[in-house]
Length: 509
Image 1 (cartoon, rainbow, N blue to C red):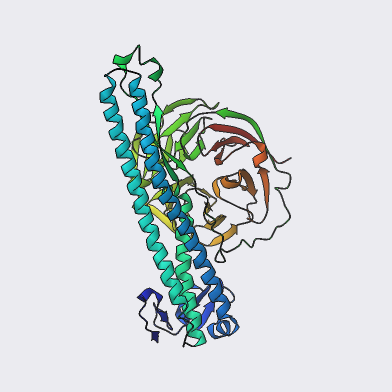
Image 2: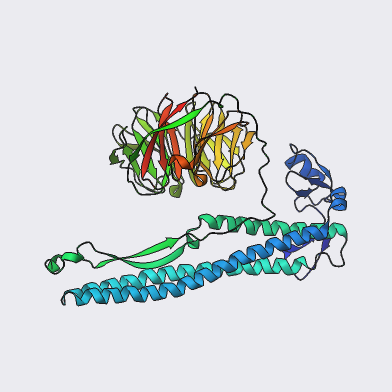
């Protein structure tokens, strides 16, 4: 039975399963989902606490649920309103700053002779082009947000009608359906946290270093400066009743209780690019990968030796043997095998999906694809296993060891361990803010970097115990990647901005 309305079909209240066309008679508390008998037997066979939908409806206070959903809608509307106001103000400010840039150019021009006429015209055109591009991006972003706002308002209007002249079951399903739509909007807003478009955009002029000498070296001057875009983060308060809180209980420490990590030295590397991955090679040298960029080879003491001659925008890296490494290239949907000795790409595996995190074990590669698959492939590119997972973030970081894969979920604030069949062995969500790079010590414990909180945490190999090894007070700002030296308890930590390597020593005394 369907209840028809003038609203879009995605808000219609249905009394039967869309997939199996059977009555919705059961309820899964693990997934908060009304289900039919077939859904329970196929998709929720491992879930516990399955109960009748009628009993859940009977116990549910519809009006309270309705108020909660309406509160979330209002909250998300306020966030989107904030973004529209901010970006609109940003456009006006940018216009004024754009005028200011041009005035600065004119002031500079008065200090020198007619040779600057050409340079002035060139830089003014560049300013207009860059600002027009940024203004267009901001305007398009506002249009996108307006669309989301209209969807939320429509949900809010429909929320007022789903409980009118309907049965309690119909009201429950109606509110539940709208709650799912609101949850989708929540995911959209959460993704905005890492969206470049939410950053404040500013137009500034970067003066050329030769300007102080232009009077004596005017003929050799080729540029007055550079128009740059300055972006500032906007804080989005995204806490809502829909957010699920971690429920891992604090437990006593076992073999990690006496573990300590000491920073022996901090080495400036000044790559000054966002870093996506890092490994220690078997010979002690270090590879640091720029996020969607180059692959840098550093000596064991942190000195930049060279950028490896590999075309494309790299992301994840792992070592196969003494002479061979493997690197993911998400934009090409490919993994490239690179010989370090003769500096050539020897193989290219076409994956067909966005590929990020990479790890080598048992003569096989494990690669993270999108947000939902970890694929195990052999060294000829053949698929051995496909592990289906659920992650709120792209699978940027993973470790493959002992037929298990451990991966971090930045948005989900969790670390998971699954076996090769896809069965979840454990999950860890205790007090994480943004887990990223991770590695495994010789005892099987997981060392994970919680970038947002500037901490390094060890998780026991069974996922039950944990301990903070490094905190913000120890001076590591925005750590991103971590790796051990081959068969040693020492290694390196690299920060997100590529400014330093921190050499650490891990002790279990």
